[in-house]
Image (tube, rainbow, N blue to C red; front, side, top):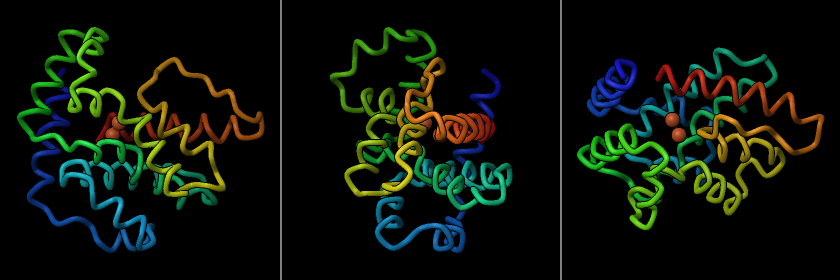
Amino acid sequence: MLGRVKQFLISISGTFKRLDEDYLVEHLDKSQLTLFLKLSKIDAQHSIRVAKAMEKDAPEDLKHLYAGIGLFHDIGKCRRPLSIAEKVAIVLAHAMLKEKLKRFLKFKAVETYMEHGRIGAEILEGRGIFYDVPWVREVVRYHHDMYYSYLGESDTESLFNGAMNSLRLADNEN
Ligand SMILES: [Fe+2]
Ligand SMILES: [Fe+2]
């Protein structure tokens, strides 16, 4: 719980800082940047922190790709950006109700919070982002499903697992 509180305080402080535009321009093209900027400021700052942490952790030839995964891992949240009050309410409800929160999926705010991985993968697919590395979209889709194991081509399985582990670590710490 303390980790969550710390994460929340970091996210609030991020709203007062400028987005690292140089970093975004380095890793995103114009249409990707337009999509990224649909995120709320809190989610955008979080995604940049995750991207930088993942990039630092990445094998040399995967640094740019890992940065892209970090930047877009929560892109599903742009479908229904939450106010700070809504976010607090849903995080608390999730802590209390756990999986039972799924009963409230008919509310767009809850659906976005609970299903942003799937929604994000669909947005990326619709825009052709990561089209040559479809396993990356699966990382985005399943990044909160702790017990998911990859069912794609075996040669991409280790790429998937490496990126997923890196994302989960960076996501928890940022
Ligand atoms: Fe997420
Ligand atoms: Fe995240």
